[in-house]
Length: 308
Image 1 (cartoon, rainbow, N blue to C red):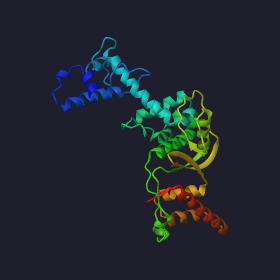
Image 2: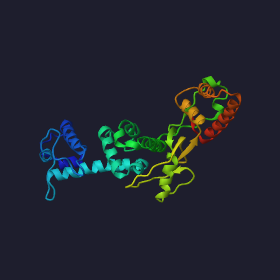
Image 3: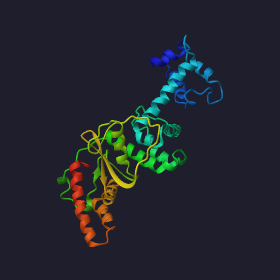
Image 4: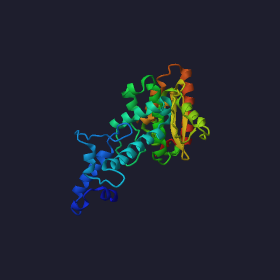
């Protein structure tokens, strides 16, 4: 409010208490600030082809040092630099894979299609993995690796931000039959399948840039990569979760991944297990699977992955 009054060219013409006039002014300002840059500068023309300087002069006064255009350009630059910086902070692995120039081109194109819609930047990159899959020209031969890394990095954000519900206790379903048990997983838990060893890739980035890494815990990263580096190709299955305010990757085998994925999709315990056991035709394989499922559930319960 204070900023708008300072920038308004003719504040005395605004009707006192006029929310309509204020809304129009805010809309003009927002449309200009959120318009994409041309390189590092504000565009010289407005969307209708008229002069951007004339457009800026409609609602911003010049001062002794800066014209109306230059004053507006400061905010236009700050807005875009902040969004691009946020994506760089949230997706350092994709940045490392593509190198800074390609990553910046990717994120600019992404923001044009998926502009910020919130006061918070936490989920600005929510659609980046899908965007990478849709726009193959921006990542080329690195598309699959970029998609896998972006998927893991957004799962980290989710693991850090999502709620933690009351942990489910074994006694809560002791008297229920497996057909009636539908297990709800913690909102912060994600599972994913990757064609690359993306967990090791991101952990090595931490170490390479003097970040502290303990076990498979994830630490913060903010690095600019001028040359690209590539993860090792390897089919892996991961669970991404939070414990004591720290994000962890936990490797799963294919059976564990399929079971968790079925449960997270809403299948009953009996249905998920039945689906998994149908993939094993040999009796001995089914017996081994039963032991593994029991052991896995004991670990997952201890980690608190299931909630009330």
